[in-house]
Image (tube, rainbow, N blue to C red; front, side, top):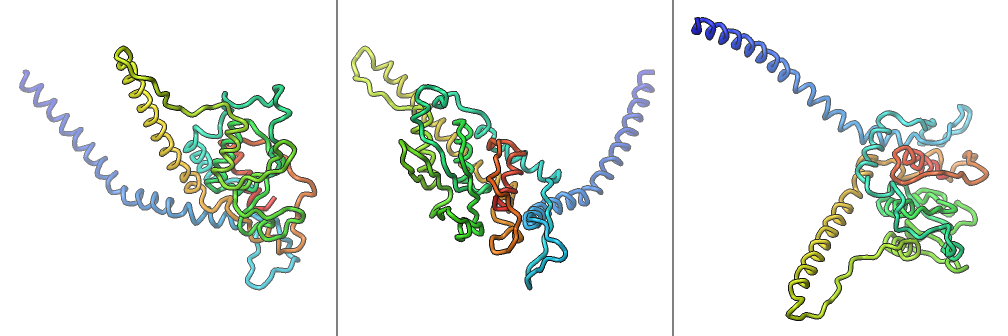
Length: 300
């Protein structure tokens, strides 16, 4: 009886294996189709994003004249599910930066607030790594900029088409009022150094030298080793931070990098607001990014 039950169980197992093999075979047969679909989707994303970026511009009426060789472009400002997804992934790639206000910031409501610098103008390009680092720090320090001017290569300000505004030599450039005088800070390093000096209480780790003696040699060794470990961790974090700076640009190719063709300053009667727009935003928000991209592309 035990042999019969064993043979019966063995037969059932063989039947199960045959069914599973058929399932695996059908899955493997479908694999090339699935792989080709995934590859075509990956290849489609950059070209679709670039085409989508070039189509952002004010609506042109059918009667408006179009110059020879110039394409007619319609307004497509509503983000697609692909835009929302890639913008969300861009935010996740920089999840530690530009999302929350630092507890070590200088209070903007204390007695010293009156003497703090005022951020007057920021020359900015949305999809620039250097500009992104500056905006992240502005978010973390809970600061507000009076005016953000899109400064793509084909923007009004970079081509002398924005009246009363000086063209910056470097993007990003920050104009601030410091002790009643206007000062310029050009480039990522200079701007971040200024912001950290004036608005942050964070202190970098410094190695404290201790006079050696027979009684404290052991404590010195422990202190030095702990400082070395902390410095190594800090260096690793900086390397990872530098690497992740590239991810948002890769996930959002061609978006927020240049002004759309039909929003160009060379065209007549491009609709623009009479007063500056007010945007409540923070750098790490995926939906705020979609808005800022359009502001750069429409040169607003």
